[in-house]
Image (tube, rainbow, N blue to C red):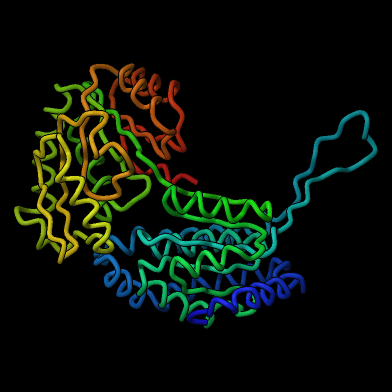
Length: 405
C-alpha cells in the first residue's frame, strides 16, 4: 500500500491484528522466510534504493551502501541464522524448593508493532527495527519519515511486493497523520527521532500502557586528552562528525580539550580535511546535503549567533541545502551551539583543563547517547568512563561501537 487515509488507520490496524491473532507469524519458518524476502528485496533493488537516498539527502553511493544497505544485509544474515535460537526458551536454574520441576522463560512476540523511522538514515532506521520485530514473530506497521519522501515511497512500493501484505504494512503520513496513527492501540512502538518526537510518542503510548523503545540522540561529548594520538583523533572525530553531513544521532556533538590539545587537533584537522575534500568542499560529490530548508536555516542560524570563533568552514547556501563542515573554537557553555543537539556539520570545541573538568561538564548536562574519549593514557580513558553515564562509549574512535552487537 502506498498510503492510508486518516479514517482508515483503525481498520488497517484491526486487519493487521487479525493476521497476528491467526498465528501466521509464529512459526520460525515463516519468520525466516520473511527475512529472506527482505534480503532479496534489498539486493534486487539496491540501485533504486541508492537513487532514492541520493534524491533525499544527496547521499554518495559509497556512503549510502556502507551505512545503510550493508548494515541491513549484515543484520539480516545474523537474524536469519539465529532466528530459531533467539526464540528458544531460557531455562531457569533448579533450586531445592523445586528440584523435581522444570521452569523456563517462554519468549513470545508482543503482537502488532509500530515502527516510526527517521529521515537521516531513512531506509536503515525504518527496516532495522522492523527486522527485529519480524524475527520475534510480530506483525509490523512501518511509518517512514515523511522528510525523506523518496525513500519512504520506495519502501511503500517494495515491501508489499516482497513481504506478506497481511502482516507487514507501510504507512505514508505527515505529522498530523502520524498523530492519528498513534491514537490506535499498539502492542509495542519503536521510534527514532528527536526529543520532542519522543515526548509525543510516549504521551500517546501512555494511554494504552504500550511499551516503547525511543532512540533519540543527544549532545554526545568527545574528550581529547593531551596524550592523544592527534593524527588518529582528527581522522576519527572528523569522520564521525561529518559522515552524512553531521546528520547522525551518535555523531560527536562537541569536543572537550585543553588549549594545547586544541592546537594539536586543529593542526591535524586542517591537513585531514584538505586531504579528504580538497579546497572546494561544496563541489565535492562525496559530501551529502542537509535534508531540507528548515534544518538548513536552523544550522545557519547557529553559525550566525555563535559567540565562538570559526576556524574552519562556515560557508552556507540555503538554496543548495549546504552547510560547510565547520569547526568553532572558544565556545562557552551557554553558547547557542550548546543548547541542543546540533545534528549537522558544526563541531564546537570547549576548553577544559583536565579530565576532571570534562567529567564535571558532562555530568551537568543530560546523559548523552554516546561518549567518546581519545587518550593514549588508559587511566584517563578509564577515569572518564567510570565517572560518567552514557548510552554507549567508544575509546579512540567514534561511532564504531554500533558495529559491536
